[in-house]
Length: 113
Length: 115
Image (cartoon, rainbow over all chains, first blue to last red; front, side, top):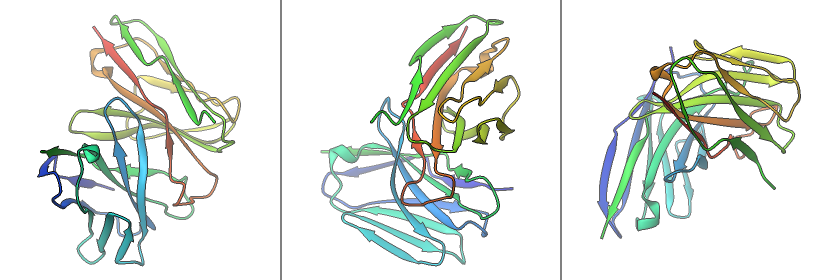
């Protein structure tokens, strides 16, 4: 079945880069996503990448996709205290199905001064 | 523009009680979903709906029921609450076709404790 795995915790200093990693098992996924969850809130879409791309950059965010290894990463440049949150990767978008996403366990990012 | 609205935000239930978690969206999205979030476990899909009158089970449907009588509303019913249902519940919606730049829109969640 589908499975998405992430490490549970990452601590970085303000101003450093953060790299959050994710592995997935379903190679038929069309899209891969990164969502951000701030305390007490729902998830918000941060960025996404098509499965036929290997990199996408969006301001401070860089998404890298290694389709061969089924590995997705999110790099946040110049990490700020406002980036402290839980980050979820998700895969989905397969044709012919409801748009169900499979989410990872989430990585809690702690930004220290 | 409200997006996805969930009520209540918090609730404490006694074992064996029942309740309905409400979810409504004003974006005319066809797809709606219920997830539960447990610490270190990520989000698990409980039920989903592809349109009014159509619902289907997700990964963890036992102990829950849903209905979808309108496009806007997708309530989740807990019958005979159990401590294992203590969790944070999220409702989400999405467009008919997967449009990645839109993704899912999530509600702010309902924190449920069963004692």
